[in-house]
Length: 184
Image (cartoon, rainbow, N blue to C red; front, side, top):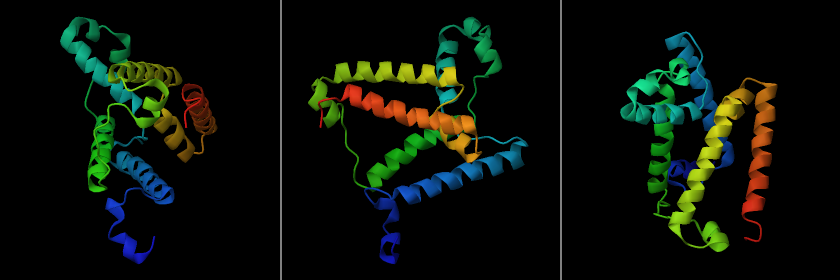
């Protein structure tokens, strides 16, 4: 990045993927070092468990007894932890960067979806919710999400992490081609 661009780095509409990747790598290594020093146990970047714990918070409000007797929540305690703060930080960081980069806009139906399936927000919401269910089920089945297996796994030179990220990319490309075939 040139000298004159450094002052505008945070407000650029897009960041260089090289800089963004380097920053993500520094974040991943920093999280491992900090968690090892503070907790005596390394914590790797991941997000999917947060959504399950959030569902546990909601379930506990509806049926406390059922939640307390749920084997999964006995093993995975329902709590606010570093990972939940990481997910909140992802949301806030995206919001802040879109506002600072002047790209924030309210959009109920993305243009590529509208071109292929129409502009009905309710239908888009149903498909988005269904996609989220499938993604979360897959993440739980795989024992982690793309950030956990992909970023943290590859960072550790894990063969399973490398295989997982290759599968995520292939599945994403295939899904996009199937869903948006005929779209531009």
